[in-house]
Amino acid sequence: MDSKELTDYKKDLRREAYRVRESAWRADPDAGVALKRHLMESVPIAPGIAVSGYWPLEGEIDVRPVLAALDALGHPVGLPVVVAKGEPLRFRRWHPSDVMVMGSFKVLTPPEGAPDVIPQVLLVPLLAFDPDGYRLGYGGGFYDRTLAKLRAAGHALAVGVAYAAQELAAVPRGPHDEPLDYVVTERAVFRFSDRKT
Image (cartoon, rainbow, N blue to C red; front, side, top):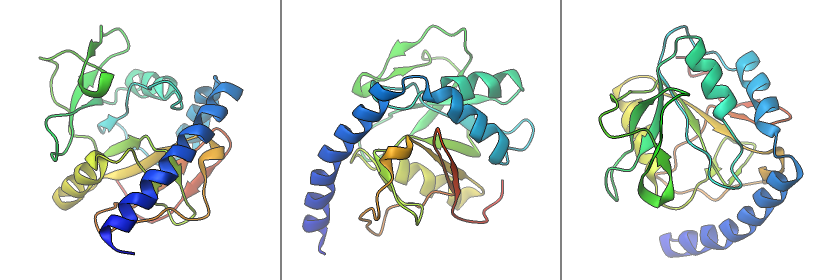
């Protein structure tokens, strides 16, 4: 499959993936609580290391229960900020009491001036995932560039977070698609590699 075919195939797959995710979200709006339990019990996060999450958009599984628990345990928690098209993400420090501001793509972020966080564990949103640990993202490549940069500089554990219904038999992948180390859903935990943080 050439580059254009791959791009077109992913675009078509995204349309269906949005529909599946929306259905899962409407069926279980409290799935984030179960996700938190599975993640905290199964993903090795060393004391005190920085973790990134995201502020959920409509339809995305809610990771805020996980982020609040990690913050309470003393982990610096960062949320993503889009710097520019084609660039890796930056992460600003977040606390549950923060007043959020509107960032790029209508995503809420911590305010400008919040300190940067360099995460060693990243909770990564997605549209679909497969049994090999690959994800279908939103098409901007932000997380792939970010993971590539952080992994080149040291350790970065990528934890995809999703509804169980978002699993596919196979996700199309290109040369720049970064694999996940784990996927955590409201029902299960999938481990794909032995990378350690």
